[in-house]
Length: 299
Image (spheres, rainbow, N blue to C red):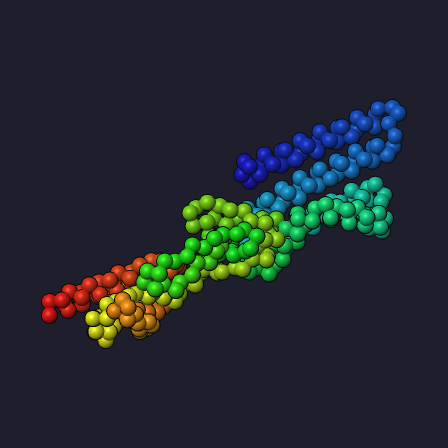
């Protein structure tokens, strides 16, 4: 048993002893109504029960985190929810309140509280859905796109006739999931906490695939023979170890005004993002274009 657990146990025992002494002193004070004693005991049961439930759930979370954080979140949620229900049931039983009376009497209060805490309850129940449906796991790299958090995607300039698009969303690694918030550490190493109700409505892009299709378009002067250019590029792309199989290279557009051809390169690359493979492929295209351009000029 480590020092942290011992300190938690000592703290719980200390709180129980203090409240037990206070409850006992209340019984010694003359003129105190009997129902006041019952209220004190209920408070004692609730406080001690919550402390014990939280202590047990923290131990379970610490043990399970070494194996699977997603599983630990679910287990901790179940333990805490079950524990709180048991504690409340014991407290009500000690005050001799029946379950039927609680349900009937709490109906109106439940409606009022539900309307007042609509956003919080929405996050709570959304967290339950996320924990059990598991659209993603802790450690996954995802992109969340949602209209609630508007992002303006910058337009690409017409350079290289790029037809790529940007997903207006938040990209990062899922760090923690609770019943109210999901924490994502963005690619710039800044954590962001998003309410679970927003996460449940968002479009979720999973970026965990080992291979991804990378598309590049590049403009080449029409004076360069397309067949020679394609063969040169294919030879150079074979030297890139992250490309799987044979890339597709073809002319996707011709500009008579600029006297140029636009080549498209579609390749399956082993990478967690599009940026690095695209950069290396563009380098190959630039090198091939310059090499063939100089060769054409010498002739």
